[in-house]
Length: 434
Image 1 (spheres, one colour):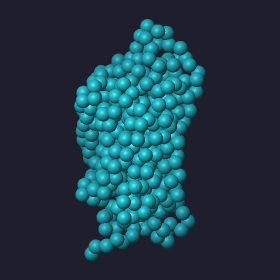
Image 2 (tube, rainbow, N blue to C red):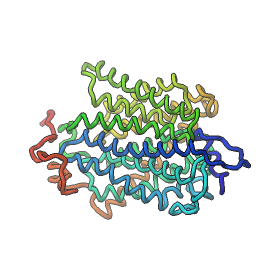
Image 3 (tube, helix red, strand yellow):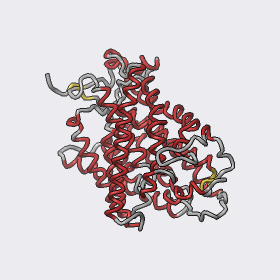
C-alpha cells in the first residue's frame, strides 16, 4: 500500500508519526477508538437537528431538522462517490486530489497510520456531513427543501472537498504552508459560517424581519441538542488524533475546558447587559466554545484553552449584537457562532500554539493562520454565491409567502411536528414598529 502520501497528514493531525520506510501495522486499540469517534461525530448531526429545531417556530421544526437529517444521506453517498477522492485522493495537486479513489476504490486493506483507511474515510465523512448541516441554520423557514439539497450536493463536492484537500492533504497548498487546523475550524466552521451568511444575503430576510421576532419554540430541545453536540464533539476533536494516545488526551481535555469557559463568559455578558442568564445563552456559549477550540484543541495547553473559550465567546457575542447591522437575516446566527468563533479559534491557534511547542514562531504562524482564514472565506463565500445563483436558475430558492407565514412543514413534507401547530404555537411575535 502507499503510505507515504498520508505521513504528513498523520503527523499534522497528531497521530503516530511513522518513518517513511517503516512498515505500517494495524493497531486494534487505535481502530476501536476511531470507530467510536466516527460514531460520536455522526451523533452530532442529529444533535444539531435538535439544537436548530428548538430555536425555530413550531410550524417549521420538522423542515429545520430535516435539513440536518438529509445531509447525512446526501453527503454520505457523495463522499463515497467522489468527495473523499477530491479531498484525499492519491496523486493530486496543491488544489485538488485525484479521482484515483472514486467510489472509495483502492482503499481495501490499506492503512492510514495505524487504522484502516476505510475507517479514516468514514471518520472524514462525518465531518463533511455536519459541515453542510451547519449551513441550514441560516436559511431555515424560507428555503425550498429541494433547492437546499441541490446546493448542498454542489457545495460538498466543489467547495468543502477541495478546501479539505488544501488544509489536510499532504499535497494541499495550505498544509504545505504549515496551516494548523487540528479538527476543522477552517475547513468546517469558517467555510460553513461564511457560506451561511452568503446564503442569507441571497435569499433575503424572513417576512417581517427584523420587526417580527421568531422566538425559540422549545428551549429544552435546544439544551438537549447542545448536550449531544458537546458529547459528540469529544470524538470530533480527540478522534482527529487518529490514535488513542497523548494527543487525543490533550484534545479531549481542551474540548472540555474551552466550552466551559465560553459558557460562563456568555452568561456573564447576558447578566452584565442588565438581563438574566438564559438557557439558550448557555447552550449557545458552549457551542461557540466548541467551535473556537476545534482548530487549536491539540495545539494549545489546557490553560490556553480557557483563553480560547473566553475570546471565542466574546467575539461571537459581539457579532450577535451587531447582527442587524450586517443586513442579512442569518436566522440562527450561524456566521456569528461558527464563522466568527472559527476565525477567532484559527487565529488564536497561531498565537498560542507555542504553549505546546507546536508550529512556527508565533508571528510567522499567525500570518499562516491568517492566510488560511482568508483563503477559506474567499473560497467558500465566493463559491457559495455562485452555486446559489446557479441553483436559482434551475429552481426557485424560496418558498411562497403564504407557506412561509404558515410554516414550511406541511407544504414541504406533508407532516407537522405537533398536533396543535395550526393553532399558532411558535408564531412570529410582534416587537414594535409601524
